[in-house]
Length: 203
Image (cartoon, rainbow, N blue to C red; front, side):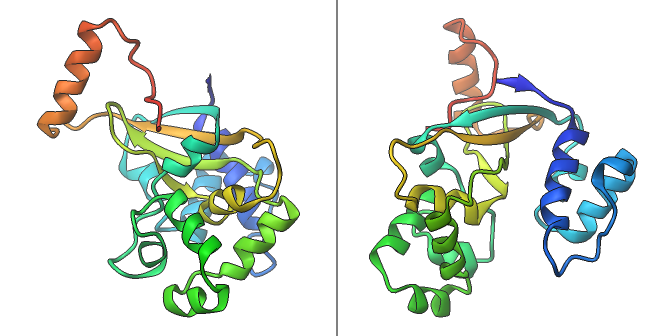
């Protein structure tokens, strides 16, 4: 696990968004300031990237995940019974991949509003290997995908074997002053056992 600067993540994410033909951002992300890059990303992906400005003191890492770890990632939050929430029974990447594998893609698209054909095309062409952007808090809490939900699901549907590690940018938010008792107890146990205070294994 390697520490990275936030601007590295923002520019990489912005570069992927700028590659979309429908995007109006025409500048090279490397040529603009860190502030301008973040402002552009917030404009293009206001919901998904909002955690960057609402959670101060983020610590960023670059790492890789195996297939079980990708399966356990939480999908981006959506209103109940819409989009990813409607697609994945348990709210995880694995739950979405299993449902796609077992059901008609056109029906699932109609039911959920998620472009299932696009996910299948990523899986078929191995076009899902760019880094995901994931965020969490310290402690035993789930990791949530902010950018790359389609790619994460596609990785689990891809026929490639063995599974190639999935690159991830991970943002760790500081813990709130008040946290659930279970999380606080888990941290106490980790400290007593001498476990390192580092990003948790998402499995």
